[in-house]
Image (cartoon, rainbow, N blue to C red):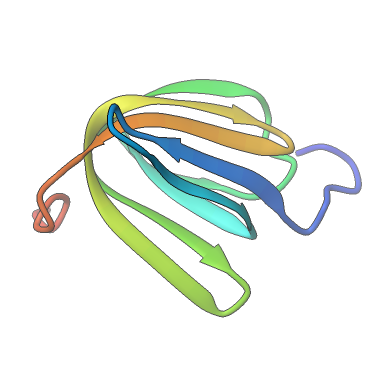
Length: 95
């Protein structure tokens, strides 16, 4: 983690048809091909291939999630950019 990270970071989730999320968030969880990755402010730079599952993000006490199927995520200390397609609501409920 970076020294003295900001308490939040920018999240952008883009699908082929729309900009789904653009917000300042406190944390994000994404479904990589090898399992879920939790992301906090100051995370080290990383490119991740996404699998099927749910992206969950938190802003203060509010939490939102939605199903996705595949894509990529670029993770930087101050932002996360996700390119994905929406999935079925039941995605990621197995296991």
